[in-house]
Amino acid sequence: MAAPVADTDIRGLGAWRIPRTRGVLSGLLLMLLGVWGALIPFIGPAFDFAFTSDSSWTWSAARFWLEVLPGIAAFVGGLVLVLSANRATATLGAWLAIAAGAWFIFGPTLAGPWHLGATGAPRGGSARQSLEWLSFFYGLGAVIIFLGATAWGRLSVRGVRDVAAARRHRELRKLRDGRGDPRRAGPVDYGTAGHGAQGYGAQDYEAQVYPSDRPAAAAPGTAPDAGAAPPADGAAPPAEHTGVFGRHRRHRASH
Image 1 (cartoon, one colour):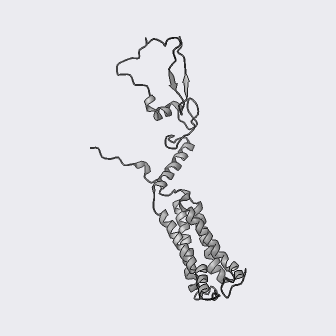
Image 2: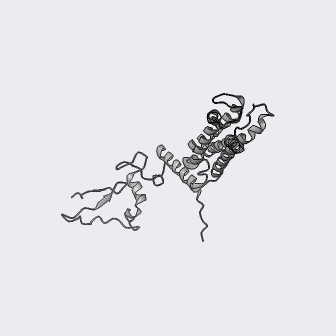
Image 3: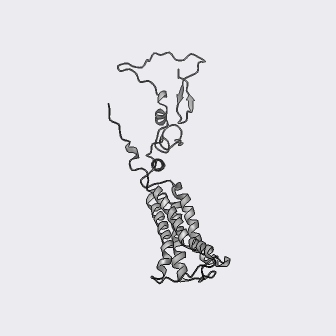
């Protein structure tokens, strides 16, 4: 029994290139949360949803270090996840979002020892104070960490779609360079008779796609029958495949 042959064609495929849809959902959510985290300290006071030291559209060191900066980091991380088709770049975006979420959680605790500014106390009753802490810092940071970790987990696995996308990209790039295999990249217009724009002959390509249409090889030691009678008058001449997609042309035998 012959040993199975390893599929070396997929070795290394999908290791770096990924479909752009891999991080779209997580990226969009991270972008929205980043915008929320960066703008809520400026908009919240108008709805009495803020901390005692906050007022609408007032800049402070605490707002920059504890809210605007991590909000921008979460937004940029989500944007990288949405746009990147490279595994390493998308992973960097996921880790940037994770760091932003962690800073939303730990920033208020470190603000005093590191002299980053005072956030003040949340306004309202106990229920609203809890909601403000969760919306501004702790809950927001936890959700951002969850989305970033989920995106990173998906990026750490090379799936079947990654291999397929990488193979498709490689074959299309080879076709643009004129050295690819047209059977792997899907339907392509290879021109008319002769050699197409990608360097493949139409008849050669058709012989690979339609192997049953190949003429039977003559037996060894035999010559073609030169005395074969031409077709009778009025009979349909033989058809010959010449096009890639089954186009036919007919020719008449010369007398």
